[in-house]
Image (cartoon, rainbow, N blue to C red):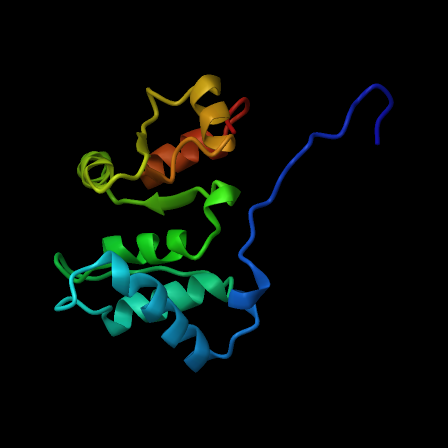
Length: 156
């Protein structure tokens, strides 16, 4: 470490081992059991939702491209619910357009979550600090915002 520089204190939020040690079938059943109380009984998890959530748990690069009404929004909720509430997990969700993020934030807030749609013009060090503290359960951003926020000097 360079003289005069201190190491930054970083806390990585991880899933509990009980999720990570399951085989695919056990994990699928556990996600269903965990998610079922949160949704109407006549709306069970769809295969695309389960497979995507499982990919996230298994720490695989995960991308979902599906039509309107396919249930993409629930994937992030399934994943969020797997973390202990005390962990203050933050789930990043990439949307193709900023306007879609605005809609998602409204939906999440209506469901009792905390959420923010990061935009190039609204991101600053105060917002970054709130995200790092776990103030927001869900952070929505567009690819353009990601490029600006994460890959420029002084960003994240």
